[in-house]
Length: 598
Image (cartoon, rainbow, N blue to C red; front, side, top):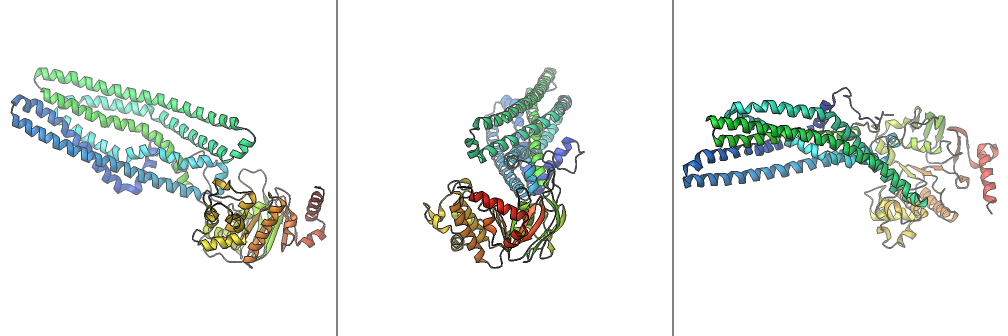
């Protein structure tokens, strides 16, 4: 099986990379497919930011030339130029803002779909290692958390950096002595930011983990709401979420303390820089080496310079919060998907287990131990045995939800791993004990097996599954909404819809995994008729039945009896009874139990 990275640690080929460089590497990896869009948008934002550098020149000209001259024409020229310039700046600013937001939304939507697509392609083992709510959180909550970081990092950051360069050139040109103050202020800002980088990154990671855990706890409770209500454990479930919520609040407060100190120190340092310029510049004005207009313009430039510097400094806060989310999303995007073969044509033939050994991840004992058995093509094969014998494991391996640890499974003599996964699974239809239905109509749920099927094919499959009768009695017939997980239907009705879905799939192999185990006798009889209809539809259908009720598999062509992951005996119903082995004992025990019910 393909190695699956642990969900607790991000999968990365650069584990020794320093955190800040690893963060930038991950961000670049996300933005790389959009290089030209980033360049174009950054250029637009740089132009918008640079236009701001013209503003203080209006003030300098007004104070030093227009106002002292007293000429109304100069006032008119200045007013017209001022109005036209700021209108242009507003239009360019709006365009850069809107396009930046639209670009970010496009990236976020793309990342979300990539993450979800990869999530659905992960090996089943990953879903046993990490709760579904936490995985969903990676696709929804964590991807949303990337928005501010990507918007700032992909476009605004470049624009701010360009603006810093432009303003620095202007202030040095105006008065290089005053500009030297920035050589003291800027390094101090950088040191403050660097000091708080690691604490913010660690705090943000803990917050994202808590969000994932809260989503997992809530999803688990809501998904099993009938069990929760049945055992009156609402308060216990509330306490579980409360514990995660308290931890979330605590981590947020810790992070906010660091953010507050960092922002406060940065702002204080910047304000001290302004104060130093006022004192030094004022002294120059007194000495005649600087005019009032130039000092005022210089102060405005200083504010303009500090605004992008502070933005770049505060971007570290967004970066660390976003990187914590990006680590979880990257772990998903970088995870190895299920391994698939190249052969898309699935042949018909026998299914052979050849000395197969398999253990579930984290299990102490193997579920199958050197199992060898054959499932003949076009025959009905039953798997029976005590609980934990490995019956369901056999069908999961046939569908390649898992792969053997040793040995191999062959179809028509070829290893299952040689076949394309989608093609292989499309050739297998499964009717589980507890069928899964989706929100939507009855028609949508049957058509789920073959989305391109027309209404006539859907209804024909329902007729074969003996579901047409009760479906037509529903308020809107086939268009009736069945609720999440089919909550508006009975167990027998859901089972017949599942059978209709399997029939519509027109598969080569039909797996019935305890399809009637949880039904009453009347419902079981209806389901058996539905299954017989499904069998009759395709004469060369290979059918695998897992059953505890041995009465339902007496007509099977072959019965394989399993115990402790090994094949104990095989044969027909009559042959196994004559052997007086495990099957005969199970049959005798079940027969006596049923006759003693009354």
